[in-house]
Length: 78
Image (cartoon, rainbow, N blue to C red; front, side):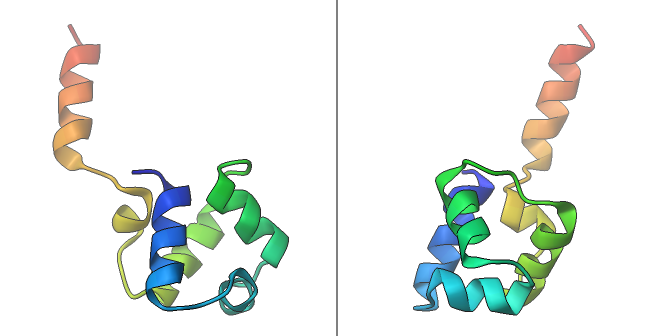
């Protein structure tokens, strides 16, 4: 799952508008719409702010799977 999907899912679970999330994490509604559509990639600052706001880890916001990363590293080293 991508940041765009995770952001939208978490926002909808809380029943918030894009504008409300934008205000809380220090960006604009237009940026939230762009992040959710996958048109823009957020800065690390925004990812950290979103994770803080939604009370989760940055890893969860960007769907990092260490198992997946390790498998990718192994394949890359072959």
